[in-house]
Amino acid sequence: MTPFASRFRHPAQVVVAAFGLAIAIGTVLLALPISSTTGESAGWVTALFTSTSAVCVTGLAVVDTATHWSVFGELVIAALVQVGGLGIMTMATVFTLLVSRRLGLRARIVVQAETKTLSMSDVRQVLRKVVVFSLLCEAVAATILTSRFMIGYDESFGRALYLGVFHAISAFNDAGFALWPDSLMRFVTDGWICLTVAIASIISGLGFPVVFELARSWRQPAKWTILTKITVSVTATLLVLGTLAFLAIEWRNPKTLGPLDDGGKLLAAFFAAVMPRSAGFNTLDISQMYPSSWLTTDVLMFIGGGSAGTAGGIKVTTVGLLVFVVWAELRGESRVHIGHRSLPDSAQRQAVTITALGVAIVGIATYALLALTPYSLDQILFEVIAAFGTAGLSTGITAGLGTAGHLLLVVLMFIGRIGPLTLGSALALNRRARHYELPEERIIVG
Image (cartoon, rainbow, N blue to C red; front, side, top):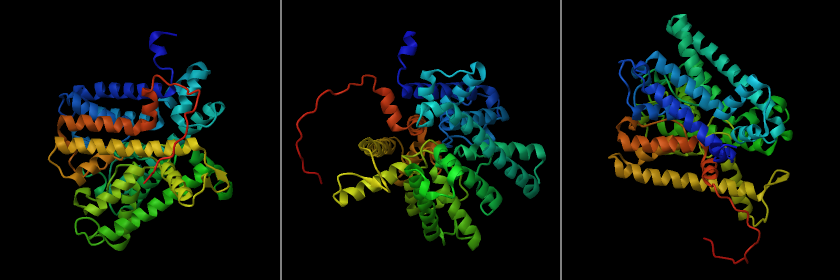
């Protein structure tokens, strides 16, 4: 083994390095003069920010995607989104299979870490399903969007196809990049576009293990695994509560839902509840929302979507597990039970660790941005959670955060994509197994 390879024994380290390499390549390509409409380099900070946002499928932008980037630049962004959405290791393993038809043990372990598969023997089959399913969903969404742009908005076939494919990739991978300055606000009451984008985001945000299980046994909920039950129930609950919250808060806001009819308000509120899962599009002007709507969006962005999918956040499974942990503690039970299964202690520790790290990262970054910029706490908190949760929504302050602020968001997007726990594992180069236990001592908690 070469000295370089020996540095990356842990799969998490390879995942981190692979995402970093993809971001670096994207930065170089986007910094080329050919990538901008003016024929001049966008600058390294702008290129780095955009590349990170694309690979980490976030959608935050410091320049307008439609007017600043050339067709070449837009294609680079779409490619980075696709690679980031499927996962660097997923793509690398697929290429390995195509070239050599062989998959070594080390490669299986690495891909298992990236795709969250439960058995290394299933990696080859899972990867094939992930790629085929992803491309199929994107093709269906692209077909619907292309048809709508042609029929409803008189776009030529070439332009409609380009818009349809770009936004299908962006929607399914929860990236949030749009080729209009106002994102999708001009389509706020267009159900064909809004529902296509929303459904694509929901499906990919459930996570591939859950999607595949639902495809096999959607008629038999009693046979679902705990992962699927928690993901579906928490996702449905958040979508319903989010939609109702936006309807109640923004119903009479003259700058958001106010001017729309009842059907338009319901569609716009539902879309606003879906997008914080990590999708990043918006049909309402977020800067004109009431602060309570910002807080609602903050919560949804921080939670995010399902595990082993394209969504960000601490994941709905983490929140679901924490609810059962709290319930068991309130009832004085020594073990946590979900349905007819008991929850391993390791899963409880992971849920608590991920949540604690997420809160700490958001808190530190918010404090730092408050010191670096003149914006208010609610605006900064919204921006930080959007970056950490790879949601890509913004109150409109992204471009004004300055170089230091942009670099801080780059770090947040990177951490949010690979996960706090994955990053922590990758950095823990010296792992020691404890061969003894110290005496217990009770302390007062609370």
